[in-house]
Length: 396
Image 1: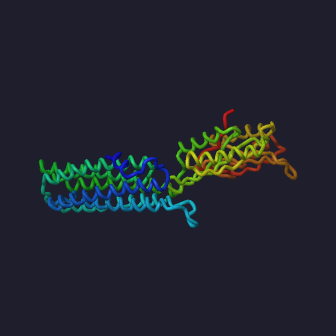
Image 2: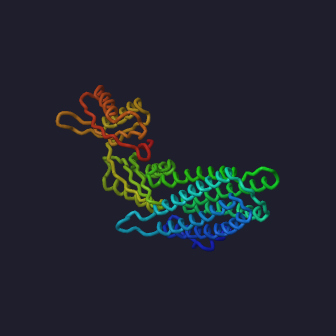
Image 3: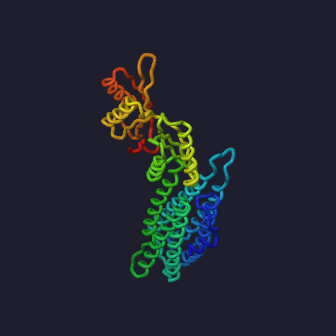
């Protein structure tokens, strides 16, 4: 059924990463969600009112909220595909993240309301009238929600959408919720146990826990979460594969919504090479990332001396020595510049964000070890924070 809907409503040969294609997939997922949840709401509210079950009625309201979430997702995808303008030069892709965040909040609100109703049912228990109609409705709901979970997961993977992953997680929660309500109804029918309220509490707590996780996952990209290690490694390996590239560092990746990532990186190349040739290689790197990966990459050229034995010796020696302070420390852009009274050894030192030692202590340590071995040199150090990955040099 999922493949049928995709083939029926999505144009063939669409690029899933394009805003227009994402909007088409989002529209399909939103429409399916509204239609299915309204069917379930109508069936469950009828069964809940007929049997007097607070858990079935709450489950019906949950489906109504899911329909509202689908509407929000639908508008989120629609707004996210709007083209860039003067006020938003990076596009409007983060609307999709906002839609996912709203869906997560709705899930948590529903969980809190279900928890309140279930606690009241435990304090003031009422008899739940068993009916096979309720069993049939709940069983149908479980099967439909299982399909919706699979559907949203599949479409979410096609366009890499956190909003649809949130919808899939919500459908999974509904399966668990409805299964719990069904078990409670059956146990109440064949035993003397009244589990309607207790089961409602357990289901509500699970929904709240899941909702909190969804809020965290949708907030992360908007708050500037570090890029995935897999993406960082792929970028690094691709850059190092170009002829003339000796190393790379200072990678930054900015996420302005799915399919709208921008990055900047420093690339080390031999200072002795023709700068025009090096510049052409850098242009090729930028063009290839945009064409093949959809990544807007800005590359900064760092010329390094490869034929000055003293520079090479200093770079290797300092790189080894600072690891006694912390194995994660590294340096780049080392050069020797003649000052007014002394020779300056200028370089950047990359410090991990969770390092406990302060910048002043790091500079003091490095200055001391350089002064002991090379008293004629003064270290001029710039502390550089790692935003994505530590520097990496090509293995020769």
